[in-house]
Image (cartoon, rainbow, N blue to C red; front, side):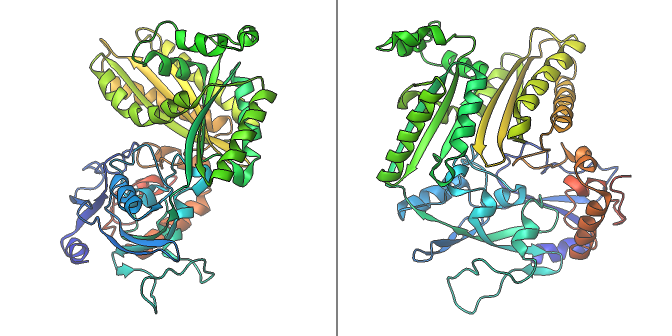
Length: 461
């Protein structure tokens, strides 16, 4: 609170900083032509304590600067899980998860961050904003007492205040954990399989991800001793030779599955996974492939950095897509990336792949991965960003969302007028101006990217 008071008195701009894993430029300082004030990055990492744990109620009170890795390890020692495991969990923080409205890989079982967080405490321009409690070590739980701080702060991206702590839900560690994989003849069969898995509702496996053919083959190529998918051929031919005619190395896709729950729950889930795989012409690929697929997600950021040494620039971007628009969005986006790459006469061919994950009743989260050769390319980051913007527009034009869980930041702020009405944007900016009249928290992310420094609204102009 003292820091915020000083910022108000000295006309400073404060930008909260968690783990630095954000991919939408949310923690970047605004350009000096837009905001000439002194910019202070508020590193939250020292606020990393678990203040209390109420095992009976299944809640914990935690400071917002704690990383996912620290939080997970602390809770596991007590016999609990937080249920939230984004691929950035080594470095990303609880406060960052709330600020970006994050989602983890086990969303099917534990929900997204909005389902896990119970309360949020924030230091804003007018002081501490929090719930009051008559009793210690309790949470308000579900409450119908007007607009609460949690609702305001989810997705606020540092523009309403500094998230300092939160009460979160915790669960006892699962009795049983295991992995499985399913090979399916083609992407269409894979999508139909995923749709049927989504109908399992509360019995859905904790994590299900469908890798398209390109991503599956990439995973195979990264194995220690790849030899033209010899392991794949062995898998298919061993004791099930009659399946060989149904699979091709250029069309096969893989669903990697993580089970977590009681022994009986996992047993039921495995049975359903097997039955549905058979219905869709699939075969089980085994737990080793399933676990490798799950773990590959954590390695992708490191692979990306390694690839830069060889002039390969790559990144991922995500979206939510309704089931009815899924095939259309994926095909159109891949075509758009390839056509934009060709139009710019860039060297080589682009590598484009996709992964379908996080199953909902009405749709899924889709990740796209795009890599390009930048050898001899001038301003490669700008060119890459331009192609990504074109891909994002294609996603929107074909029924996808602006973001499923990465947030808007500055990278996607130019698209907000396409997804929100002017009345909506005016109202959100008015809330911002009421909470932070002199724009102390001037990160300018999302809708707030167009606010003038004097506080006057220019959104959508």
